Image 1 (cartoon, rainbow, N blue to C red):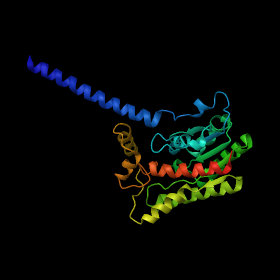
Image 2: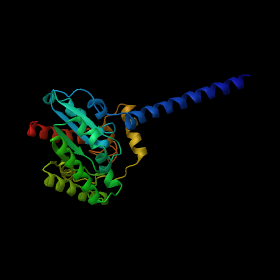
Image 3: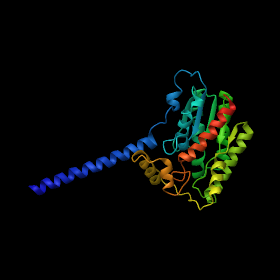
Image 4: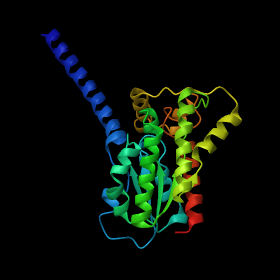
Length: 271
């Protein structure tokens, strides 16, 4: 009888542990990959038009900010921008083609005064031809400027991994050149995010980590952040990285560079 009771108790205990693990994994997955960012277009652009300026930040996961630094939220929190509405139009996994498809619903429909665009990392990873990427970006900027009159800023893409001599970062150069070309052609402003991070990496002069992104690595980083309350900087530095949580997404230090570039631009354009 005792043996049966003990086996039953063990089975219950194991079931509870497994349920806890699955529940924790589900929580991390939701917070990182499923939930919408604060003030997404669906939340922020369906009601009354605000009195103050509207700024749309459009892109992929680095803009969504649920895995890595939330630079859009950091802008929203600055006293300088009291009265502004910051719309986060970042969606995990998006390419330039995805953003092009949703320009109308996620940017134009928000009636923006200014638009910040950071998209292309997933194009590089998927080996989307640079010419295709350039065409998508030109179409995005063209539609935004023609249908809203908003000021537009294009951010260059940060390194993938922190070894600037890695093959993937040589490929990245072509995409960043396309961003600069489109900014010149369309009259958009160019914000040198890649250049800032690359300069800081070169100044350190120590061997840097090669690009080695994987979903398990990203999920582990998210788990450390959401369950164990470690900062994105702590997570990156524990793996000898300065700016990237998982070889792609920005830690707090990297996010602060984006925030600073965006804030300086917004102050300069005086929307």
